[in-house]
Amino acid sequence: MTDPRRRRPRADARRNYDRLLAEADAAFREKGTDASLEGIARRAGVAIGTLYGHFPSRRALIGGLLRERNDALFERGEELLTHPSAAQALIEWVRAVVEHAAAYQGLATMLADGLDDQASELHESCVRMTGIADRLIANARAAGVLRQDVTGADIFALMNAAAWIGEQMSREQADRLVDLTMGGLMAT
Image 1 (cartoon, rainbow, N blue to C red):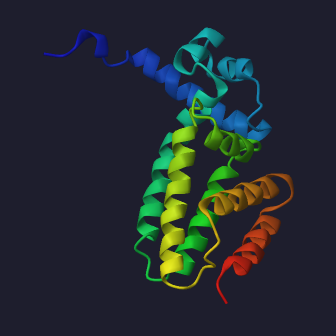
Image 2: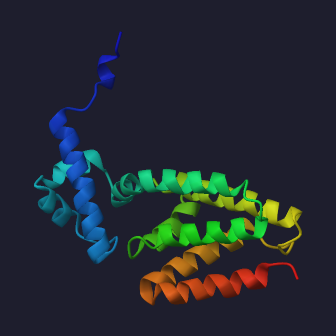
């Protein structure tokens, strides 16, 4: 028997949820993560209370937007753990996370804050990103291609810095930062 408290959402509630995510994605791409939540609700054709009913905070809305993208990112990270080149796997992971974190202006900062804020809706995904980086780092160390003093926190800081630079300056400059920094982190 189905638990009556765990009903499937009504069709109109699901449509509202989907419209809110679509409009939030468009607004955050245009104006960054500080885009008006009221404006997002208006664009979706719902009241602000409907938005807050689905997403009690800005971070919850961003977490909802990132859910599918996070799943794809984590799947890529798991694939990279079996890559034949430990150095290339780590570099590809850094690039994938930088691209992920640069989707919206302001997202890199929110992700950096989410790592240390256990109450954040983004915390779990930040911890998982760092965990994959830690495993890739361990593989690179074991292969002798990465300096022994490099930590997951170092890699996470690089990814956030490069994402921020990509938001503020250019993707090319962010790529250059990754290339230069990863070159300095590799064992010689």
